[in-house]
Amino acid sequence: MLTSTAQLTAHELELLKVFSSDFDFRIPEYQRPYSRKPEHALQLLDDLGEALDEPGDEPYFLGSIVLVKRPEAAQADVIDGQQRLTTLTILLSVLRDMTRQRPVGWWTSDRRQPRVVTNES
Image 1 (cartoon, one colour):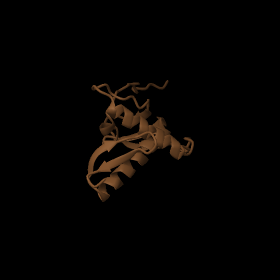
Image 2 (cartoon, rainbow, N blue to C red):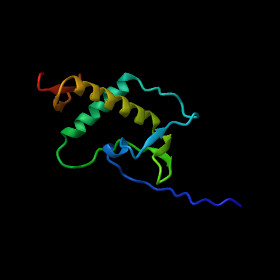
Image 3 (cartoon, one colour):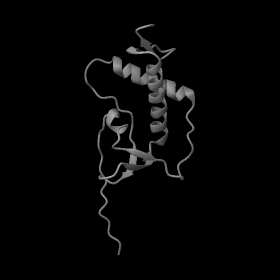
Image 4 (cartoon, helix red, strand yellow):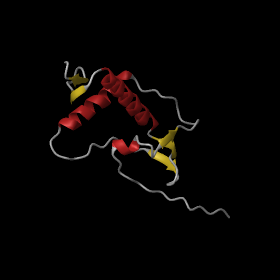
């Protein structure tokens, strides 16, 4: 007879925490390849920009991510949410690279062209 001490838990986390050293995401081989198109990333970026423009402190729900992770370890196997995590990683990497080129003054978004506005814009 097999016994397990594994528990199912749910947590609401800020994006900063999700992309911290507390998580080392692994995509299991059975997951489908990344298939999002640029339009999906632009739509997500636009949605995030709109959420930032909303008054109040209501958190923006990015969706669920299902992981298999031991509490004491950073390694986390992504069971669901791989497409979203990958898209967010790509967007954050692009924003990081853009801010290395020019210091960021503030964020703005218009529906046609989400962009980072710098002090030089």
